[in-house]
Length: 276
Length: 121
Image (cartoon, rainbow over all chains, first blue to last red; front, side):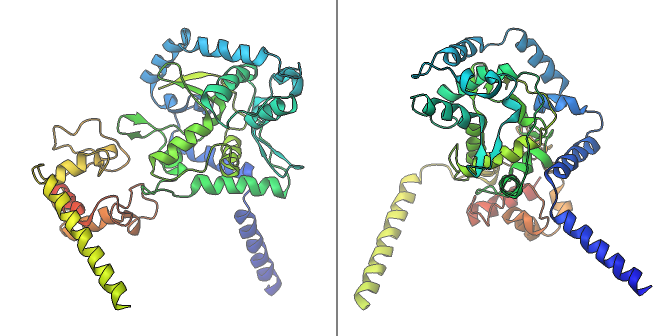
């Protein structure tokens, strides 16, 4: 009997340890469970539409706008950037896996050799530097934004496929998770305050988008052809809660993007979309 | 040491003079009411999260928090209402509400005015 009790205590301790070291996959499943329990009528595949999934009128307006997207000229510009050879004569396609097609869902990934998270923008900049060009400013809307707006269309429909393997990758993921759930700024909000706790709820007249499916469609075109990259949006969010943001391309925001993207695993990439 | 203290005192006195002259310059401006502060997007911005069903000009209100109505019945003790505005996390660690006093989003006087206004709803 005593042994059995000790065994039970041992098991429960083990259980506690497992909970404390929640895996990225259990985090994702728990987040899905949170949303599907709270909003049983919203299909999981509709989360890629962000806040539009919560409002049929907004979704109808979006569908109408997407028939003739107002930002086609920007995508054409991005296509030209993508196809123009770099100084070495090589193209972006030649220095990325699979010619740059159906790969966006693999980013960000953890580079074990470099010991850090590599975003798609980092990979494009590495490509530039290796081929005689200067790196673009991280998350810059006018350069990397335009280039990735086109480049990501080549991965349209690919399922988000972020991998967290090994202790260093897990540490980067955990760091991003910590940033996501920590309150910050004078207004004391965390990312989760709005995009988990209040996702689908109105702040003023705006519906807040859910964390699930949030990373599959960046950069977005807001209110027409105003392009915004994911990390410049992060900086904007921090500013909104009156917090001094870490700069775009910093380890902190790259780790945040790593965690954030993992939450959308299994959801189809939606390159270049309109958002309000 | 005494010289430093004197210099400090002089400096503080100087700042007070500056502050009072700045106030004097602003004097013609109408004093902000609790409602002004509550509705101001850069200050209370209460409407971002709360409806105010008894205020016809409370438009485009959010739903993060409960509607502010019958407040004197819900908060017989006005001090508790004020304390919630000052730092709501004391009452609910998971609240979305910014700690207006603790983080100095509003001054103590502004919080007094906002508390009076909310209490009247």
